[in-house]
Image (tube, rainbow, N blue to C red; front, side, top):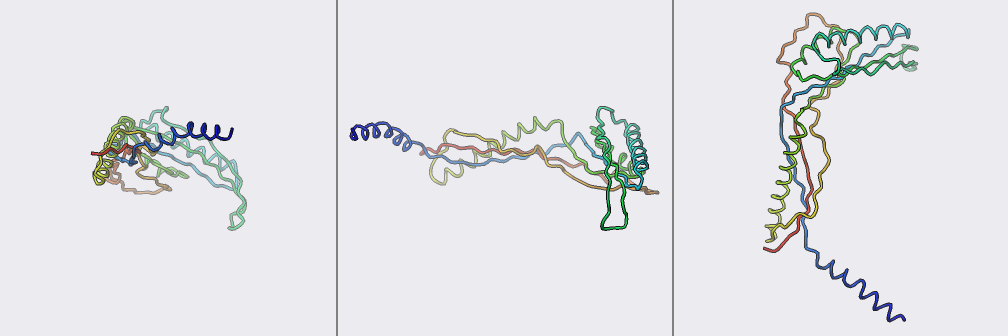
Amino acid sequence: MNKIKILLFFFIFTPFFIKSQDKPPVIEVTGNAEIKIQPDMMEMQISINVEDADLMNAKGRNDESTKKVLAALKRLNIDDKDIITSGITMAKVRDTYGNKGTYFTVTNGVIFKTPNIGIYEDITTELIRIENVYISNTSLSSTKAIETRVMAREDALLAAKKKAEDMAAVLNMSVGKPVMITEVSNNYYPNPFNVSTEVNNISNLDVTQDLFKAGLINVTASVKVVFTLVDK
């Protein structure tokens, strides 16, 4: 009986062992690509933050500053559908380290986007004239990011193939068919700038259009590809 079991084990597992020995050698490489494009969309995040010992005063001052921000955006022809307000948040703060005592903070947020990147200087100049306003973040993007990413992915695959061919040639071998392709997750483009700027009332402000340069943004792609290796 034991002999029969041994024979069955041999006949069942031998084909798998032989098959594993017949697997061709492979090479795994990573291909990367980057395409620079002109941004055509700007998004700005604005924070209105007020501190006051009286909660109603804090809310009233915050409401007034928020109205002025929205009015400024309207004057600059920002469409209502492209403006989002977060709604106010209120908190009671006990200053145990300084001499402020107990006070309240009231915060609101406004986010807007516009294809008119040239408005940057105008909007920042307008915001400087409003109390309690902070520009917490400004980012640039492109409406052509998806189609550009497709092109970058193709370039990344070509780069991976070229790298595999160069490495295989050193071993006097050739690259066969790909047996696995994996896209490495990454961002379409990094935020070209991420600033936290407080804007206060400043008189006699001298701002020129040359202060803001949009530059280019990067659309990147990265892939991992496993190729078989074959003898030349």
